[in-house]
Image (cartoon, rainbow, N blue to C red; front, side, top):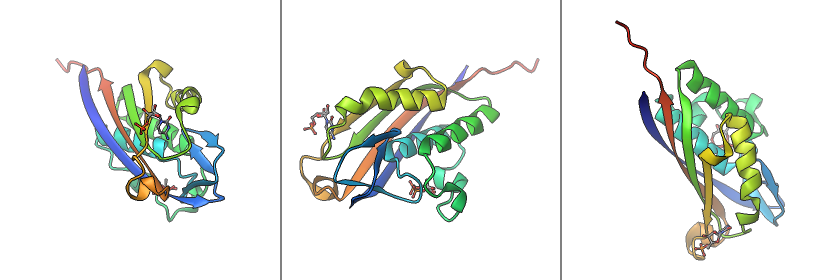
Length: 164
Ligand SMILES: Nc1ccn([C@@H]2O[C@H](COP(=O)(O)O)[C@@H](O)[C@H]2O)c(=O)n1
Ligand SMILES: C[C@@]1(CO)OP(=O)(O)OP(=O)(O)OC[C@H]1O
């Protein structure tokens, strides 16, 4: 068995009156994340962790923000695409651990639904995806609620076939 780890990071601006999608869940909040897709910062960080682990470049390489095919797209679809890219190289996901840095709203009540959405899109058990959140203690651009950040790490695995 060969295993690899990956790391992903993403950041998006928060804009008033914009929808706020996180882990495929629509959060009720005065502002929301702005981007070319649905700006789901958590799912983007996870995509980059998975692509990085498999040495498959990054999310912007596969889904450029200049391509209208990805405009407004649900990032869960991009996650499914990333899982297919990994599968083509024989990789399956071991586990994912993610951290969101956001001042408000509180994410804890939404974590079960986010885990369910991500597990379904990635074809993994909910027990293999962990989602955590922290504020930035009112400091910096996150503290001023100008932006949201997410980090993710993952482990991927493949069974090596013996050529002899
Ligand atoms: N947007 C957020 C931020 C934090 N949480 C939860 O609150 C706990 C305390 O956060 P601090 O930043 O004050 O340490 C944190 O451990 C999370 O459980 C949250 O749900 N949503
Ligand atoms: C997902 C893509 C593509 O719609 O757009 P954004 O939603 O702007 O997200 P980002 O994390 O900046 O980078 C990847 C992009 O190419």
